[in-house]
Length: 176
Image (cartoon, rainbow, N blue to C red; front, side, top):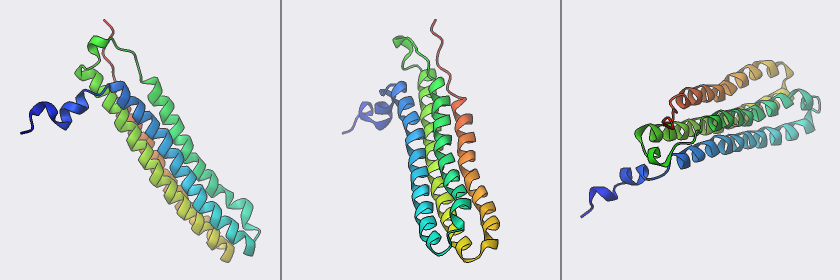
């Protein structure tokens, strides 16, 4: 017979809110950088391959790599914002509801930003790859596909905005 003291909810409440905060910050920056790297890999390999046929595309299609790199910068910015939300609390108030809410808010914010930027990096990488291949075939398609790539890049900004809104819930108890 399983008792209520061995439930997952009880286990999660016993983990320090600072641990959740640190994991959220790490996910924010780590997964964002993973998304940027993956997007750069996808775009870069297509760009190099297409540049064999049409060397003129190399310099102007580097904008796709810059869009992918912006995804990593989003994660770094949010990680810095989340880091500034951390405050020390007396050990007597470590597991208060307010402390737990602050830790969970920073954790959720980090997850939202990290995975939104992972998907954004993949999206921008795939569109950048298509842009390079299309531009090698027909240079009039570059601007049209670049507009689509800008919309794909906006997904990362949406994740950053939602993450900042979520982190506003992180208020730690006073030290009194």
